[in-house]
Length: 453
Image (tube, rainbow, N blue to C red; front, side, top):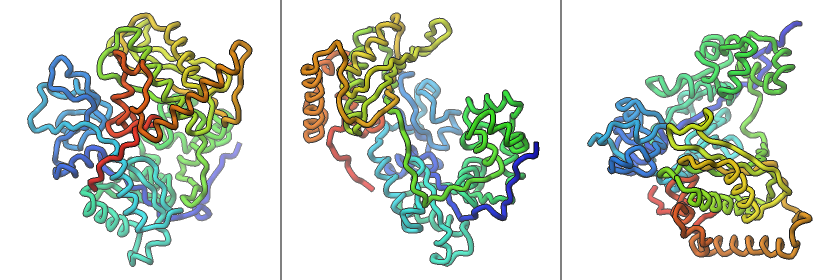
């Protein structure tokens, strides 16, 4: 069967920048303290402690380039991966997520000086895409590379944050240029075009270094005898599409550098699940403590569902054991249960606690995660045959009353009695954002962070 071929002369060719704020959280902390982000060894760590008995508790959320080089750590390390006692030159700071979000907003406002809203896409907290095709003439530059240097300088002068830029004929090429070359170049910039595909894309060493290919996808491709990006590009398009569906077709096109998306296109993101997880500051060894925590997390999930106008039909619980603890070769367990659509905090808690009690056998626990999926728009309440409709309606009404009070006066204005028991963390975490210092998704405390940028 003849294979599918692409004609680059017919493909869209734009000037796309993919800009990354280098070691973003660590760089923000360095900027706030007046330290150079490239030469200062710094880690952003949750639950830092100088107590040797608690030395392994901290989770490293971000590291400066110098800290990674000196101590051989990554952004997914723990405190135990650092030399202890901690080196005097090492800066250790707690996470401040609200401040990072504000810095992200400030930097993206700088980007908006170089392109309009429809040609600006925030990809993550530290990465953004800009389509500057129509801006080159306006800023009197010869090419996108020159404009990228101007933007990098502008960001640094206003924030002291270093950036790296991938430039490409389309968003895919810009992203690949950023991830695979720009961060290594002396000027932290790389420019990939269609003509560079054989020498650039096909030379990416591992499948998992290619954007959009994780370990599971790489394993599937390995099963078909594909173990490199080059082999992916040389494989048969129709075979890939037949065996992997649309994913196979997309991967084949990406291996040839093809991406026909435009930043100006309207995209409606589809999310059919939401969840929350916590890495605990210590081992939880008592079942009651863990149940208190699960109840609080169920309350948060219910609050988020009601706020978004959804009900969940599948609820999942993940329990991660302490390091080194295994049962039947597992380091934890994950279970789920399907139910009638609900956003009731109490009903969600009952489901999750039932899953916990059925599967927990006394292991020390260090991580808890809850999630709900198969979401539907909340258009009514579905009762079951075994519940009193009036009582169920009262519980739902109570949930909404609690939501309104918290929204107006803050999360701490009304809390469940469970949150005063040992093991509870909702009150402590009510000032967090995304699980880190600065706010709590779904249970916001209404407080505003100090703006210092």
